[in-house]
View 1: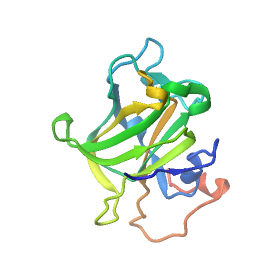
View 2 (view 1 turned 60 degrees about the horizontal axis):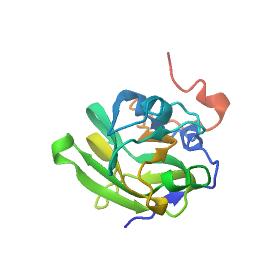
View 3 (view 1 turned 135 degrees about the vertical axis):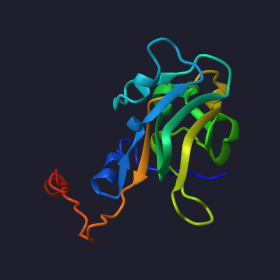
Amino acid sequence: MATPSKTPPGADPKQLERTGTVREIGSQAVWSLSSCKPGFGVDQLRDDNLETYWQSDGSQPHLVNIQFRRRTTVKMLCIYADYKSDESYTPSKISVRVGNNFHNLQEIRQLEMVEPSGWIHISLMNQRTNEPISTFMIQIAVLANHQNGRDTHMRQIKVYTPVEESSIGKFPRCTTVDFMMYRTIR
């Protein structure tokens, strides 16, 4: 079992984007859920608001499917969970699977979380080559909840890809907000 690297409560993975090494690509994917209560679906899972959440409505495992139109390099998933607010709705065991479609998904990570509170960073690096994975589909399966809860809450999910080096030439990384505003030629 892998242990997720957990940031302090409230720490935002967007800080990683500011370094210029990763970029959030969730908007390039098609998202689907195994079930949801009305008004608690994909829109709430992706709205950048930590007060809203996806709530499942069915039997476990609860699934979040993230499908890309073409093979995509993915370095990391970030999931926001809050045990203090969600209690028995908080996931305690998660499986991350990747593949080309629903029929050939393979588990690459299984995480056990104890009362998570904040962003959970899940590395999707290939264990043998230490390279980011390349896939058409990611599936997050909630296998169990705290206190044997039936339905689950997930507040946010972010998907990150590494930023490629420029083929024009090697330039120093722009790390300040002022420099990042001007780092691409329009």
